[in-house]
Length: 477
Image (cartoon, rainbow, N blue to C red):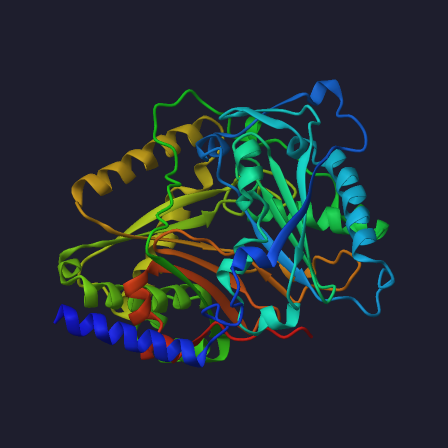
């Protein structure tokens, strides 16, 4: 049976590669790394010095728990502009303008130019952000036909070995500008997760883009960032474990899927009794489809997993739950990783959706508004103990992690070249699911990382393909 499955996998993989050469990297027959060449590494400092009274920044308790080497990366890809005010600029001039505007933006976001001194302390010493420039030896249009995850990760600045070795864990902002042969530009921003969640990164990018394209009206509307997390939820001396950020990278495969919202909407109307109790969101339905098919793929190869319960850890935003509301210009991490246990037999779509909705409702009602002040420390301690007990009581848990950038207006970031053709945030960690809106808001993009053998079954599952497609082309329009 094992020999048969092994031969079957090879046949399926060979066939799928013949149908989708770009997805499997056959189009780029040379070494992927040779397509992206780092041409310069610079340090960008604030254009004016940070006042002495802002020299040290105390982080929040939530920031304190984040590992120092974890970054929050989002990638914006822009076609070569033809009709913008900056269309006549060369790639070199665009890069110079970006460096100048970044320097100005860092005056307002001065902690990002500092250095991490301890798990809960930043020295705002203006030592600067790391700024990388790269050339991409292919056309943006070819890349977007079916984006290659291996090539995409070469646009991420902290994946550069030299930069990572010198700076990861202390430097708080990495930027990489990559230019395609056609003039298309990639802007990748990787702030330390110590200082920024997805909303914070979006706030920083809006300000930088407004300065770059000299949009004074938008710049005035945005308002200054606030670094008040340390007073809202002060750090504490802790013996609690940090959030686990270990990455399993051996024998893993990451796939991009795009789910059609119109098909998801039809699923809502056919979801039986669940709709009578809850109105499931598109995000929860997409997540449930991915989980259902992932579990089926795992059980195909590992029959013993039938006897294992599953835990889904979701990153849940706290910003709107805390009173008063944590506004988007308040920097830092305002989310909590909430685990939800599913029994061995809870694998049907309506069961997954129902339990996710109930778990989210319970968390928001009982805990989400308590992450502030002294009570914040108590709820963090309580939640950490509950998580430890969950894993202790249920040996051999089958774990998934899910996070979402949906509803963030990431496609509104305009540096003066027009809006991006694609915005994405790939992650490579076993059983990680990362969701984001498509450009036209007619779909949800998902990056899913699974064991290589499981992925071979997962991406062929009819229940998955009924609602989504694997790595479809991206339009430059």
